[in-house]
Amino acid sequence: MKILVLNVGSSSLKFSVFDDSKENSQIFKGEFSEFTGSACNLFYTIDQDDQQQRQETLASISEAILAVPNILKEFNCDNIDAIGHRVAHGGEVFHESLLIDDEVIKYLESCSDLAPLHNPSNIKAIKMAQEIWPTLLQIAVFDTAFHHTMPMKAYTYAVPKEWRQLGLRRYGFHGTSHQFISLRIAKELKRPSTDLRIISCHLGNGASICAIDYGFSIDTSMGMTPLEGLVMGTRSGDVDPGIFNFLASKLNISISEIEHKLYHDSGLKALTGSSDLRDVEQKAAGGDLDAQLAINLYAYRVRKYIGSYVAAMGGVDVIAFTGGVGENSASMRRRICDKFEFLGLFLDHDLNQSIEVAKHEVFQIQSYDSRIKVMVTHTSEQHMIMQEVNHILTKQKLSKEHEAWHVPVAVSARHVHLCQDSLDQLFGKGYELKKFKTLSQPGNWAAEETVEVIGPKGSFKKVRILGPLRKQTQIEVSKTDTFNLGVEAPVRPSGKLDFTPSIKLKGPAGEIYTNGLIIAARHIHVSTKDAEFIGLKDGDYVDVRLGTSERRTSFANTLIRVSDDFFTEMHIDTDEANAADINISSAGEIVMHETNCKSNITAHKSINNKVEKL
Image: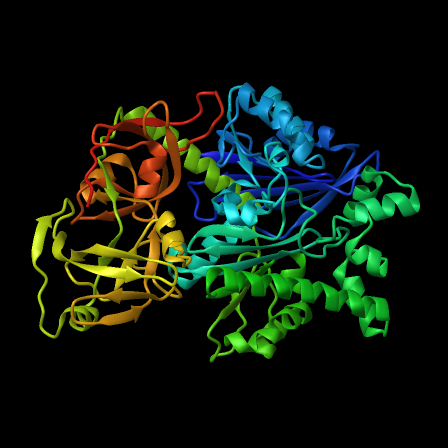
C-alpha cells in the first residue's frame, strides 16, 4: 500500500510517499519552500538517497499542491492508495486521527480560530486534495491529538466557567513529533513506551516540551495556542497576560497588534535581531551581550520546564532532544543539562560535541554513570502520520471482517495485593491467606483477610486482599478514594510502581509504610485466542463506550493486555463505573476510534457487559 502524506505549513508544503511493502518505506520525500512570488525551490529525496534541489515556477502553496500529482508521476510514485493530512488543531472533539468527510471539515472550520495561522491552510489543502484525488480515502492526523491524554489538572485554565465553555483550555501542539520520539526512543532501548518516562524536547523555530509518562502525554509546554511555553525563534513563549492592557494603554495599539508582535517579532528575534540560534550563538561568541542573554534565557526556560515535568512524573528515564536546535546545537544541550547533576544526570561532553544527526539514528550522550539517559534523534512527523493512516485503514478493515466482540466488564473496588514480606509484618510470620472466593481471571482469588489503608487525611477499613502474593505490594484505589485518604496517586498500569506514593497499611499483627499506591489504568485482559481473532496485540490501546443511553460514557486509551492465561474481560474502577451508570444488567460498545462527530467514521463493535464486583 502506498500512502501520500501532505504537511502544509504557513510558508512551505512538505509531502512524502510511503510504501509499506518495503523495509525503508519512505520512497519519496519532497518540500516546496522559499516562495518568491513567481517561483519556489523543490527539495526532494528518492529512496532515502542524497537530497536534490531544483527551481519550480510556482507562486504559491496552492499551485504547489496542484503540482504534486505530476511530481509523483515523474518519479513513479503516483499509484497511491490513501492520503494523510497533518492538521494543527482538532479542537475538543477530535482526539484521534480519523477519516475525513463533510462533517469533519465543517467542524474543523468551526474551530479554526483556535489555530488561525495553521488550520485554514490545512483545510484548504484537504479540499484541494479531495478534488485532485476524489476516489481516495483521506485521513486527518492532528497535532493536538497526542495531548488529549493530559489530565484535567494539566489542561484546565483557572478562568471563569463561561470562558472554559467556549473551549478555553490547554491543547498542546507538536503532538505527532512527540509521539514519534517516544516510540523511536522505546524502539532504540528495546523497551515498550509504557515502561518509560520520557521528556521530549522539540527545539526548533517553534519549540515545545512534552512529559510522556509511561506512553501518555500528561503535560506539554504549549497551551491553547502555539504561543505559550518556551522562548522560540519569533514567539515570546510565556508572558504575563497583564501586558495586553499595559501595552494597549501605553502604546495605543490593539490586542491583535500585540498578539501579532508576540507571534512574529518576539523570541530570539526580539532579543538579538535574528530568529536563528546559529546566528545568535555566533554573535554571543563575539561578545554580543544581547545574544549571550538570549542564549541563557532560552536554556533557562527549557531547563525550568524539564524540572517541572520531572516533578510531575515523579522522575524521568530519558530526556530526548530533537528539532533543528535540539539536534544540532551541542552547546545548548549542554547548557540545558548541566544543572541536573542533582538528579544523577551526567553528560559525556565529548559524545555530545561529536554527534551529527543525519537521518534516523539515535545517539546517547550521557556518561556511563548517569542514571538518566540523554538521547538525540531526528523527528519525523511524516512517518508518524503514515503510521496513523495505516492504523485507521487496518481498523477499518477489521470492522468489516467481524460483526461483534462480546467482552464482559468487571468493576474493581479498592483492594490490596501483598508481597510475602508485607504479609509477614501485617499478619505475623508464616501466616497464610485464606481463600474467600475465586475471581474470573484464572489463578486469582479474593482472600478472607482485609487490612486498613491509612492516609494523612482519612482511612479505609476492611480493604480486601487479593491473591496470590506478588513480588511487590500494590494498593489500588479510585481517584475519589485519594481525596478521602489525602494523598495523590498516579494512574498506572498494574505493576508499574516506581516513584509511587507511600501509604500506611494496618493489619492484626502490625503496621507498615509501603509505596505502590496507584489508580489502576483501565485495561482489558484478552486471551491470546481472542486477541488473534480481534486483531489486537499486547500493549495496544482501544476506546470503550459503556453505560446506559442516559449516561453513556466513552473511556479512551484502554490498555490491552494479552496472555494465554487470561479470561477476556475489561476492568474499570468504581469512579468509572459510576460515570457510566454501570450495574449488573448494563450494556455497551467497544469502539476502536471514538469521536464525537456525527459522521460515520469509526469502527463500532457491540458488546454485552457483565459486572462482577470484587
